[in-house]
Length: 136
Image (tube, rainbow, N blue to C red; front, top):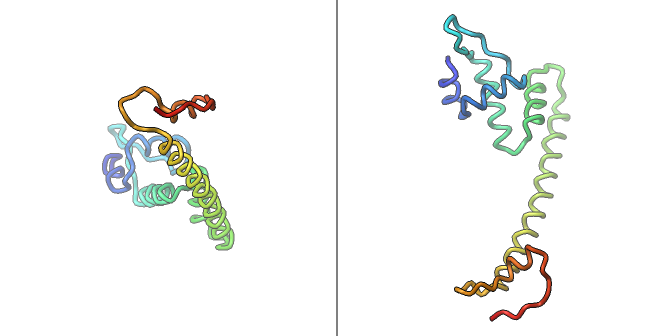
């Protein structure tokens, strides 16, 4: 299959596929007589695997490592599970940070009148201007 077909079947763009190939994330495609890349089922499987891992928030390097583990018959499932649980811990930390950011934004928005006036406590807070200005 050509790169357009591989892109369609994997849910990735052709540019992303070329990047993954250049970075050694997936095996290099063979070239047809016309110079076009030709991908096989194994490469399509690798692309789909990387896409799913990335969709779950794994970094490209982590996705590559998981792909390598998938192809390693000597792998231990405990190692894979540990990596996934470490990723869950990172997500939990991000959720805490996002919750704090959300609350800060709500607090800022509650200080703004949101009218036609130029006075904007949100911009003042973002600029570091902490002087108390009366809301008019």
